[in-house]
Image 1: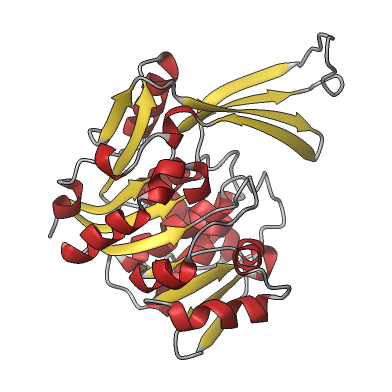
Image 2: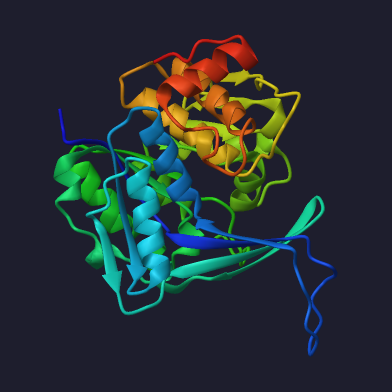
Length: 317
């Protein structure tokens, strides 16, 4: 048994969330908002925090700046039970996203900062000896990590570490990932359907699946929102598992990351992929019962209670 079941490698930033905005910003004019929240951001951080809440032993590998935002990031993760001693501190400021909410719509503006700096050389290599599994996320937000992805994957293979990957959306929409070379090194590939179609340049989900299936190194989980998730194996076997629908959604921020946390928490416990898929669908649904990406994930017992009371299901671990 290794010290950590999961090492999350990815981006770290704060979210500055503005609500109650009187009107859209205009050049040369001052506008007001009625509410502001400064909190831990990043998809990879939501994944790590929720996996820790689910009882997994989790550490985080990332980079922050020498600033108060960096301290907020580390203290927030530590408070969720995530080990933070693999988080480095550099000269580039911590990244930040300004989230401007307008009713049901929003506009985001991100400064990548230190999240764009961390590559293979900035990673403490001892994490590969201490961890059972590595989860990679948001590659297109991190140009250095994207550049060095094969170094990371090759060392993981050398150390016998399994790897999951959720590329997330490419803000530049260039999709410069050679999936034919990367996917054979990935144990669990976890895109959503829009990302998979964009990555492959295909118009339909079926075409996109057929495009990447020959290159799969393990299994693929395609997140399909309210339709559920699709488990795909290299031999063509598929299983669509309908979503557990919440009739009173608080918000869906981080639902995909929460799905990842449930699936991988089950996976590192040695459960079969079909059982992991149930866990992922459940934790994705649990996410919608609380505010933000981590609000519903206060403890494993709390998540189990939500699964039973709101969805009539038992979390399978």
